[in-house]
Image 1 (cartoon, protein in one colour):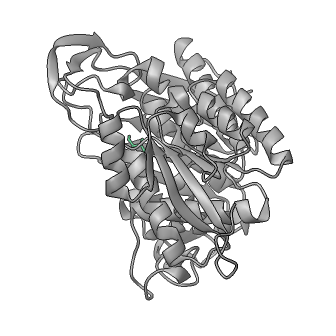
Image 2 (cartoon, helix red, strand yellow):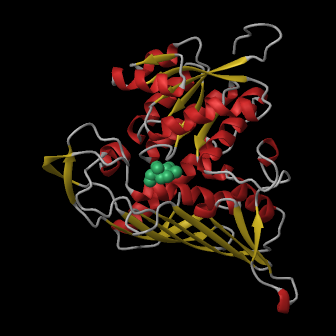
Image 3 (tube, protein in one colour):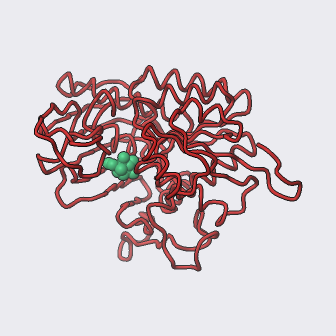
Length: 397
Ligand code: SOE
């Protein structure tokens, strides 16, 4: 962190690797966060990195980054970069994160933390060593920072649901339904690690563990790849975007859908469903928690709301009621608009950046830490192991 002039806040130089969908979401957050929240440090968009010179330059210009780099090692080595934000596919997370931490930088890494438990373990070890030196390593499970989800966590932690019995979570999308949708990197195991499981399942496992404050002890799973072969993209694939297909075809090497049941260490039973084949469902992350004293339900497609049922209320008037999570008393909301004016998907990334900047300033680890990311990775591995063995109950190590 440098001190450009004594009257200004110290600068936190951000270097981002990757510039597609998540790169755009994080860029927007870094640009916005210091204008909305009072921060102890001023995030500065120092450098953005990507392999394709023209594309990374265009991204730098569009999103307001000072410099475009084509080599992530050069980006990490820059003196004006204090924090490395990794927005690449999973196959490069471990290498970049470990190199950045060893170079003394703070790290924000997109989810899932890695493509394997071994990588996630190595990253977590590097993060632990770096934390001793005062560095911060955070994983980008941004949905924790949707205000309604953060409020749900506060309510569970305050005991408003009593003893948790059920956790019911789905994450439903439909962008892969067309069998002619090309074989982008998200459908290749060597790049993405897994399919709906790592992309969507990682979010819901993290959210379930965060909201309950508990960890999954074991799972029984089914996974399926409904469309096993797809046209190869004509140009470098960019994940979710529909690109032109070429004449060639290739094998899909990841799951299209993953379903699993689970048992929390505290005794609650859970069901999870992650799919890219739920026609009509666009970004439907829904979670319901049922406890001995009440229930909570959240739906990302209605992200300014939380449903709450207080089971201690007299039966005639009891029932789910809608909490509009748009008030200054709610998490993060005092910095935004007047009461009643809602937020969207992108704000979760702004909140993530806010909390990360405070963590860098105080030197106190910011959740979700790499250890949290590793815990999710172990669940994903258990799901795959269980599915491979015909849904056998598989402990999460
Ligand atoms: C694609 O399925 C995707 O963009 C995920 O990769 C993100 O993590 C999620 O926020 C929205 O859906």
